[in-house]
Length: 211
Image 1 (cartoon, rainbow, N blue to C red):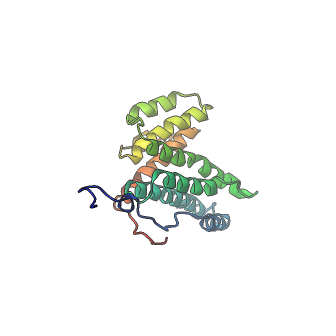
Image 2 (image 1 turned 180 degrees about the vertical axis):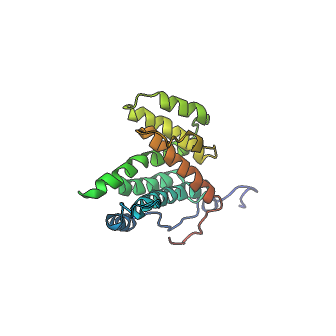
Image 3 (image 1 turned 90 degrees about the vertical axis):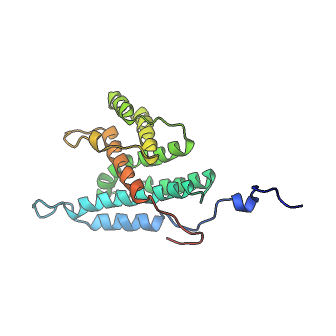
């Protein structure tokens, strides 16, 4: 008996499977090795020291890797379960304990700032997030500095809105603060997320492609 017109088979409806490696332990280890050998002092000139520039690239690389997963989910390449699994795999690597030494001081703050990346991605997938970025930023800044848990909830809402296309967060990032809060750090990371999503506008992978 023929299928009814317009009805897709299970095979046609299933997301096309990919074998794309978004981030792995080797990549993380290579970054840590490079950072451990980088110069964070510079020559005293106006240029940004090599290590400081590398830290930004390090965080940006992770952000892009995770948001590629989101973009491919949007493109129907992964279902929700697969998407959350892949995000969790990257998160486990990125938030793993650091080896004793100077890297803790350098990379530890990056790990904290990236908490919002993973929280925002999950919030975006859940859907029904708030989209009034201005109100959310105001709410986040009104929280007590030590209320990190609630601040992350608010920041995740902002991040989800930005992944969904909302504008943020350059005008809210306060570079003049002598002692920025974790919420400020999360806004800076969300700004990076927004730029990453723009760069991934046409990103896609064909089934079977590798990294």
